[in-house]
Image (cartoon, rainbow over all chains, first blue to last red; front, side, top):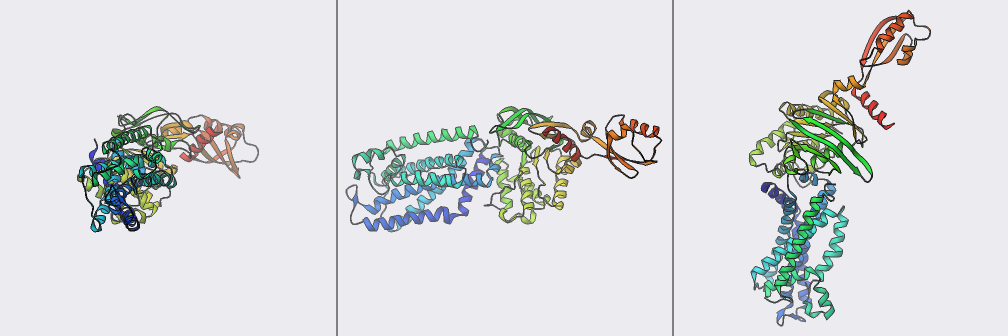
Length: 253
Length: 304
C-alpha cells in the first residue's frame, strides 16, 4: 500500500479546509450554536424530553450529529467538485494511488473536518449547558461511522457532480431535509404513528438517535440497530465508491 | 528496451473516432515528437498513457508496465506535463511540489531534488509564492517541475511551450535536453514544428486518430517530401520544356522555382531538357522543405 501517498493526499485535503477554516469550521459551529441558543430559549420552559430531560440538553447531541453529517458530506463533495472544475484533480490522478487509497484519503479528511466541528460544538455547548455523556463509546462509534457514511456519500456525489450546483442540489434537497427530519429537534415518539414509521426509513435518523443514546442512555430505537444500519450503509457506499472508481466514471473517461 | 509501447489503440467519444488503431513504440532514452493538427488524437493518446482516459481497445505500457493492469507501477515511471495551465490555488509552489512527490511515496530525502528543480526551472525566488500569484509562464514551469518530482524515466510534454515567451522556451528546451542526455525518454507534442524538427530524433504525425507518418526526421523528409530548386537561366524567352513546366512553381523574369521529388531523376531530366532547348543554367539553388511543409502535405492529403 502507498501509505505515504495516501497520507499526503489526506494531509493536503485537511490543509485545504484549514486554509478556509472560517468557512469550513467556524461557520458551521456558529450556525449550530445559534440553533441551540434560539431553540433552547424558545422551548426550554415548554418541553421536556425522555420524561425529565431539558429540551436544550436534548438538542445538543442532535445538533452535533447534524453538523457532523452536513460537514462530512460537504467536505468530500465540494473538494472533489472543486478539483474537477479547476482541473487540479489531474495531479492526484497522475499519481500511483489505488482506488481504495484515493477514496480513503478524501473520506478521512472529510471525517476530520466533521468531527472537529462536532467537537467544537460539544465544547461550546458544555460551557453553558450541562451536557452528560452516559455511554462515550456510543458517542465515538456513532460520531465516527456517521461521519464516515456521509463523507463517503459526499465522495460519490463529488465524483458524479459536474459543477457546484449539482453537489449543492444534493446537499439542499437530500441531505438537508433528511437531517432536519431525522429527529434533531424532536423524538420520533412525538410524531403521529405513520410519520414514526416513515422516519425509520431515514438512515440519518439512526445516526442521530444512536448518537443521542451515547449522551443520555436513552433512544427511540435500539442503538444496536443503528450500528447495523450505519455499517450496512457504509459498506454499501464503500462498494459503490470503489466500483465507480474502477469504472473510471467521470474521472478517467 | 521499449519505454512506451502502444498497440492497436482505439478510442471514440460520442461517435467520434479519436484514435483509430494507433501503433507506436518509443525506445528508452529517445526524444520523440508527436505532431498533428487539433483533434488529431495526440492528447487522447497521452491521456490514455497517463491513465486519465480509458481506451476502448488496445494496449499501452510504460517501461513494460501495462497502464491499466499495472496502473500504479506504470505511473511511477511517467511524468506528464498537461497542456492546460492547471493549478491548485490553495498552495504555494514548494508545497505543490512536495505534495506531488508525496503522492509517489517519495520521502523527505527528495527535498534536494525539489530544490534543484526549483533552481533549474527558475522558480527558486517564487517557491514561497501562492500558485494564484504566478504568471502563465511560471505556472507552466511549475507544471514541468510537478511532472519531474518523482524522477520519471518517461517524460511527456503536451504542448509545453504554448503561450510561452521565447526566453522561457529556450530555458525549457535546454532543461529538457539535459534530462534527455541523462537518459530520460521524452515524448513531445507541439504545434511549433521547428521545435520538433530541432529536438526530436523520431517524429510521428497524427491525423484523424491515425499515425500517418512515422520516421526519423531525415527519413520523413526523404520518404515523403519534395525540395525546391531555384534556377536562373540564360536565354529564357519563350516556352519552357514539358519536364520543367510539370515541376514549375513560379516564374519571374529569368528565374524559375521548381518542386522536385526527393530521390528521383527528375532534376536530371529537367536539366537535360533545358540543355536540349539551349537554355543556359546560370545559377542553381536548392531549398529543403521544412517539417511544416511536410506536415501540411500529409495532414491536408488525409483530410481531402
